[in-house]
Image (cartoon, rainbow, N blue to C red; front, side, top):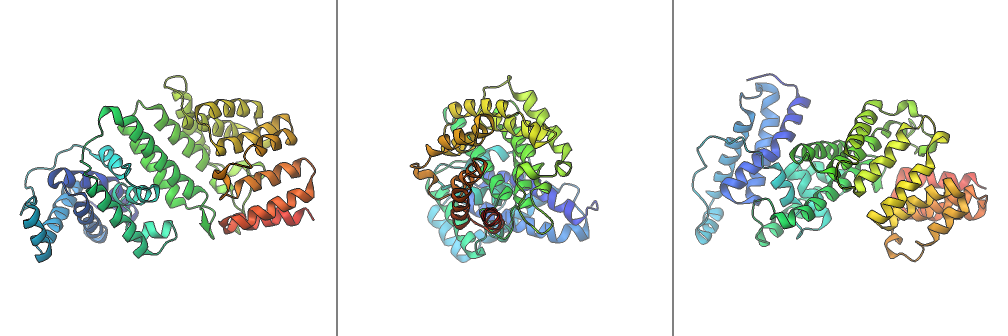
Length: 407
């Protein structure tokens, strides 16, 4: 046994969680019950290891405990009847050695199965790969724990009904499935960096978990340029977190942030990753977004930001991955290079886009550009509309403050 403090145990368990689950699913073929058993084993370890010490082989310890919990469940009367009907469950756990094979990538693909909705993919990834408890996930997404438990349970049932196998997708499907995995991690990071609802602007636990999983994915698929791009984007964006709010929680826009508070270690790592990746792999949306973030982070001040270069990158991004959010951000770059009215003209192309109907960001950006153009009354109304459309309390306060300032 070795002594490790509670935070160290938590980090170790999150690293081991997908590996242990991979062992059980590969042995017994039942993702739903295996995942429940692993969660029970993680809870036991979190309780015992800080006091008793970490076992010599923590992975094998977790596999053994989870296997016992799995078989205990199967031996209950209800589980026995289901087992007899299906004739597929073994009575005793596998007694052989624990292989060193890491099935985490396979597990990520399974959690992001196309039969699942995006919220279910997020929840299942956090639970099965991230090792978070149902309560932690429910808290992260501001829903009651029973609601999240039902969501996770339905997700596991959906995977089971879809007949998904615990294997890497066929080569022909792998790139498409990997894009789904990257999208889930991107959404997870964004939810942590700017929470969609509630009193806090950001959730550091979610951004940290997204970065951890992106690092893990890059280690598993080191040759993929978009994985590297996503990790770099997360690091370069998260590096500004300490400067995004005042001590009382008020939002601080990028142009007004104290850059001395930015995390230079993260910036250097992110710039290094994207610098090594660009030109060596097929260009993709995450790499381009990371390159844009790097230009912002390397500028000594807002006035010294290389907006023409940012606009050029957005022009490429709009070709590689067109969409309303890209156009929205490109409108700001156009305004900074060619003037606010040129930016407003680009923004106007989104007015009839239904995909922007339920977000406050279009009106928030419109208010900003109208303010730069000197149309203060119209800017005030746009800020007010944006404030009414967001469920984020810090953003509501910030937008209301911008509107009040233009009286």
